[in-house]
Structure formats: C-alpha cells, structure tokens
Length: 184
Image (cartoon, rainbow, N blue to C red; front, side, top):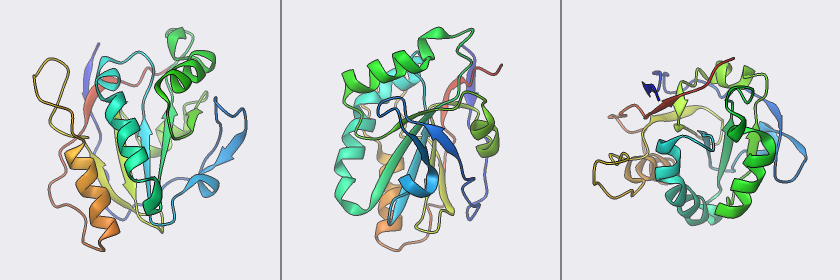
C-alpha cells in the first residue's frame, strides 16, 4: 500500500465530462445526467483500499444527508482489475449493494477519467458547483485508519455547505490521503 496524496487542482477548473457504466444499474451514464442541481461530489474510490473502507459508512451517510439539497454524489473506480480483481465490476456491484450506496458506482476501465481529473489516490474527493466548476479538492476529514479520530466528513461537508450557502470556497483544502490508484 503506497500512501499517496491527492494532486492539487485550481478552484474554478471545469469538471471533465465522461460517459461510464454504472455497475449497479448496468446503464451507461454521463456526468451531465448525474450532476447535481446545486453541487456535484465526485469520489474516486475502490473496493479494497483500507482508506476507503474506513470512510465508506460516512460516504453513505453524507450522500443521504445531502440528497434533498440538490447535491449529487458520484463514485468512480479506476483501478487496474487485472492486478486487483477485487475492484472489478461484479464485486463493485456487490459492495455497492451491501453498503447501500445511494450514489452510482461507475467503472473507469480505461482509466481515462481518472487521468482527466488527475486523480491520484483512493479516496480522492472533488466538489463542483452548479456550473461544474471545482470548489474543493481535498480530504474528507482528519480521520485515517488507525489514528483514533472519528470519521465525520467535516471538511467535505464544509465544502458542500459553502456552495449551498453561496459562500466562497474553503481557503484551506488539505489533500486527501490514501492508496495510490492502481494504474495499468
């Protein structure tokens, strides 16, 4: 497990468009179809990363908490499934159903979407406004596996709340930390 930080991205950067299969519904979907009316949160996650496993329950709670606010969550897995078969589409679907993901779980087989977003780790969090311009790219909160801090989603919640309250983006955006994306 290589500990990796998310790459910096300038606020105001437009979200790259994509068309990917949703492993749960079996449908191919686009960013335009899935984006939220007020905010869109894109999560690069996977099944096996201990950092993602550590925050999964909070991701589900947050997506449910913000469901009625015009904020949509979209999860994407871009890992190389030849070397990490536990991150393949069939097991992604099983995990999404077991955990009750209230958001689509998309499979980026070519890894082109992860590259377009300059995603580096799992989990890697991006928040976009109604125009799909970046307002936040950073950590969920200060909790990490084994550090004893409760998972609260504090940083990501503040970033979403800033959009919903028409406030400027957070000045402090600590990078997310997790396992590196498993590139082909």
